[in-house]
Structure formats: structure tokens, C-alpha cells
Amino acid sequence: MVRKEIKLLIFLTIICLPIFIVSSPDFLKINGIAPCWPVVFLLPFSLKNTPARSVIAAISMGILIDSFTVSDASYIPSLLFLSFVWSQYGLHNKKIELFLNIGLMAIFGTAIVGFSIWVQKIILYSILRNNWFHSWSIYVLICEVVITGLVAPFFSSWLLFAYKKVN
Image: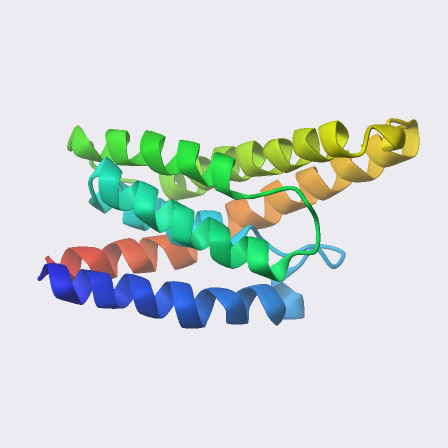
């Protein structure tokens, strides 16, 4: 059973995640801003696994996502934090009964990831501390949070159902 779960995670991380990041369809975007796919894929895995497995998954997803981005800011710290929090939530055997609870967790996760990237860019590029930089950063963060909150209940609940079926 554990092997099937690991194979599903490897398949989703190595094949599906890069495809969704590179070629996200236009109907899943708001003004060209795609959902935060690492959050969508990490949420159900972290809810169903221990903190150790979730941290390993977060590090591997973070490394994979960082290899696609050109920026010096990294996804790894925020994904580590989210994987630990969500796995602790899942360990307490709390059931996710509503479809929209997954969306709400994805909204908060995307906000944490976006805010982490934003703070890292402010620290790294201290020259860009002007109003223009903050205005588009807020716009991107809001759009990414909204679209991830709308997309996550569909994809993450499907993945959560697939993990339940494996067990």
C-alpha cells in the first residue's frame, strides 16, 4: 500500500507538476496568473502522511519548482512550513467533511507561499522597495490566492480520494 502511494506521489511530482506549471490552461488563470500548483499537490499528501514524509515531499517539490523559476527566492521554506502544519492537522484524525475546507486550506497555504516569496524578494532586491513593486506584488498575490482557492477543491479532493483508495 505504501509503495502505491509513493508511486502516485512520484508520478504527480515528476510528471504532472511540471506540466501544470509550464502549460497551465488559460481557463485556469486569472489575467495570466496560474494557481499555486505546489500547494494543490502538497495539501492532500500532507494530510494523509506523517510529518517526515510530508517534509521530504515538500523539499522535493520545492527543489523541482525552484529549478523552473529564474528568481533567487525559493519555495522550499514556505512549503516546509505548510507540509508540517498540514501533516500535524492530518495526524489528529480530523476529517475534512466539506468540499470547501480544502479550498480554504489552499487559500491560506497560497497566501503563505506568496507572502514568503514576496518577503524574500524584498530582502534580496532591496533596490525595488517602491510603490510599483508592492502594487504588482499585491495584485499577483491576490489573483493567485483566488484562483488556487477555486481550483484546489477539485484537484486536491480528487487526490485525497485517490490516497484514501490506495489505503
